[in-house]
Figure: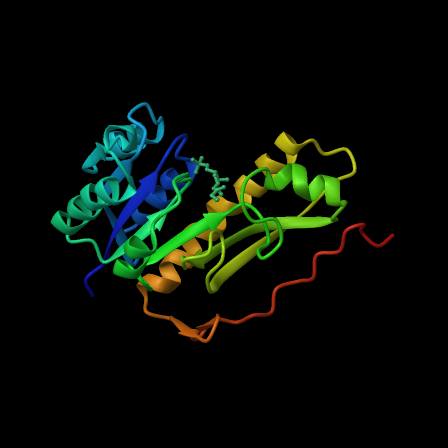
Length: 217
Ligand code: GAR
């Protein structure tokens, strides 16, 4: 079967992009990364695309008068690459309703919290300040409201009493690197179906072990 053609939008480090590129090295993986776009020319993540021989481009948002112009250029590159699905991977620009509508149900994002808790920025500091014992990450379809949209999958990690925001971020990031390729595969296999605000997953067991924090004796 033809692999789903995926475009990835980044803004910086690109470790989630790397996780997706690495997963797609397996010829049996149901998606391939065909283009990478960064809104910041200096984004380290562009190097992962370059090393993997994936066409990549910086489209500097500061060179456009407004968001529609910038997004028009992004959409044009995605269209030229014949992209079926767009993955946001640490892409730190808010998208217009027009762009989201254009890519509706073909646009997914990873966020470093268990949404709907802690949307927006400073998620890890927020989780620590709130005293939650478990945090994690979410892969979801993108809708107009920032960090909302039907949830495809989530991964949980414990929050330790000694955690700094950076320590928790690193633990969550590890989980993102497992969750994002897993969720992209489900989408690319056509196993996700949006029903109301939820996503139904076809043919996947849901019986993972419970994570208790604090642990039992
Ligand atoms: C990741 O933790 C991602 O979840 C987060 O930015 C980081 C990017 O890291 N995204 C958001 O906060 C979007 N709301 P990466 O560039 O190494 O993939």
